[in-house]
Length: 227
Picture 1 (cartoon, helix red, strand yellow):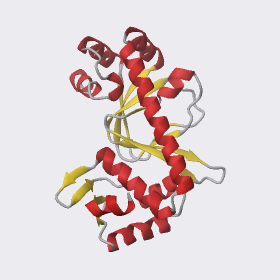
Picture 2: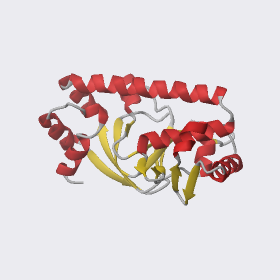
Picture 3: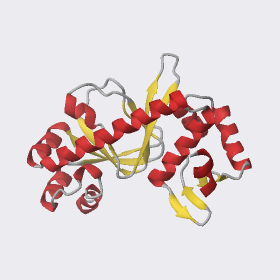
Picture 4: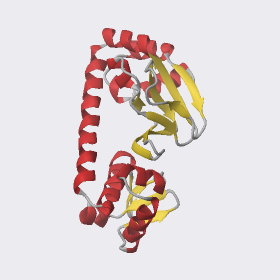
């Protein structure tokens, strides 16, 4: 990626909001751009954390693996999102695995460069704290949903969250262009792929959503009845 394209992207990343152009240009000079094919492991749990990652293209998922090999999906990140900041701040190993779900380009900012930027630009430090707080609140919500909602309710919650984060308003409702696989949704809500399939088919039968391959349209009544 060109320096201009990197600077343009950084200006849209939440943790660099309200950072002046000079600091953004300085950051872009420090960043390394790297391409990953679909299914690549960006880093593994317990690896040393030595860099912050920003998604310039593609999508990744944050996952844990149980002793039996069962995959638990914690979150998905897309273009403009960042990850890997926790290990830079607390000097602890990575807390989860990150895997690309499609061909991706990631911007990599090394620990020393990131810390230098934080010292010179305290606004970024405040933004990081705000984002960490937001993600912690989201984690608390997910834990609560797992405890309190039935499986269909948890599947609905995943779809609503996707709609709120990356949905597009269309005539029939809220369009999600890239729905996670049924197995990914199952990993997020602690159930089987077959149960997710039944839930999606039931929602569609009731006219609450429209499925077309990876695309899903959440009808207005979806939010009223299961939101």
